[in-house]
Amino acid sequence: MARVVVVTGASAGVGRATVEAFAKRGWDVGLLARGHERLERAAEAVRGLGRRACAVPTDVADAEAVERAAADIEAALGPIDVWVNNAMATAFAPVSALTADEFRRGTEVTYLGQVHGTMAALRRMRLRNRGTIVNIGSALSYRPVPLQSVYCAAKFAVRGFTDALRSEILHDGLDVHLTMVHLPAMNTPQFDWALNKMSKRPQPVPPIFQPEVAARAVVFAATHRRREVWVGFPTVKAILANKLAPGLLDHYLAKTGYSGQLTDEPKPPDAPANLFEPAVGDWAAHGRFDRRARDTSWEMWTSRHRDALAAATVLLGALGVWRLAEGRRGLRPNR
Picture (cartoon, rainbow, N blue to C red):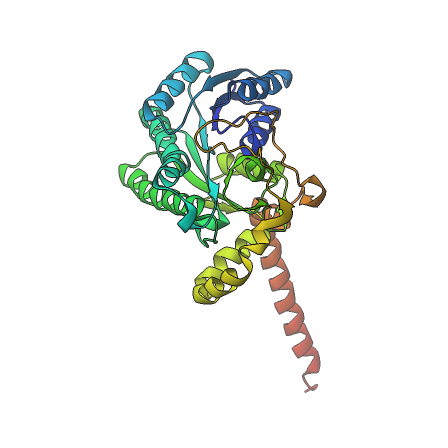
């Protein structure tokens, strides 16, 4: 029997890449997103790869809608083995330019959307005592940046929710795995359709990675027992640097955080904004930064192969100790 995965935010960006990554590996896919046409195109991509797809137009900010979608997917495809909480919506602006409704909406989608998805998945996985839930975090789950307070706050909340729930799952003795994947800057449509209150077009802070890098990390997290997966060396740097010198980073980002996230291009007068409604357009996995984006991650490779690398490190260490011991014996005078 084929395994079943559900992906939220499945119609574009990392979600779209994740949908295809699972389908290529033989999974049937349940797809949740708001945009009907894009969602159906993503489902057709799954079917084109020879797998079954069940697309359910859903706003993840609506808990009841998420629950209904989970029921529909299980009725169509069978028991859900993996649930990936990927949907997000945000705004690029300083706090002083944002409204309470914009904060509320970004929080409902990016944070509560993951809560709603987790609750729907866990409700089913608890009964079967199996399954995996993958929550999508970010380097910004650990180190916030200016102009992205909506997104950063939501991702911090996701991390707190995930860690609290993980302890509850352990307490209950459930064989349900809960993991987070923390992403670096990604080449997705986020930087074309997110609400932007700045005068310039936004950009991810380089180095930028293709969404397929994130998708491979999500598949890996779904099929391996890792507490967290950090994707890309920039994510590692951001997390560790914030642990060591958060105050220094505050001042550094005060000087560079605006210019580093904005291009020299003026914002188009008809720029879309998908915070409250889906953006119109033929968006898919990639954004407009293909020429600058990397399609591999050295750090992700090492994470996937950590056991082999650990064994190699131990072997090399043992070899070094042996050679050092041999060298010392060779220096001893003859007796």
